[in-house]
Image 1 (cartoon, rainbow, N blue to C red):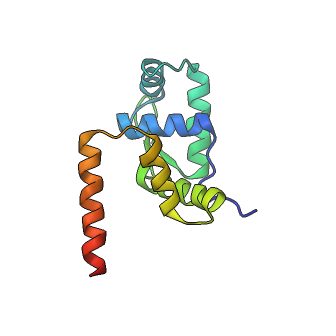
Image 2 (cartoon, helix red, strand yellow):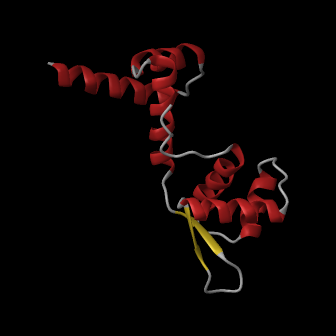
Length: 129
């Protein structure tokens, strides 16, 4: 099996999501954000995960101040595309249609999401004619 482009563990992804939501932040701010989100990692755990993410190239740190300030080097959209592509390959032989149909059939969509979905369908439909 080919190695995934972005191989992240569950905790690594949670810490990266915290950086996307909070923006550049020291370890304590990331830890506090995770605590507010219902997770309870220790300070040293968050620090270790941030160091590991930096070694993997997903995070950069500014070491000029008293506390290191970490920032995500990779966007949520890029990780999302990569993980969705891997899911499509694993479950749907690369076909997006069955995944979209399953999501629409089984998940609740907000009125805004439904409106956006209609717009995308109309755009796709008009590009075929």
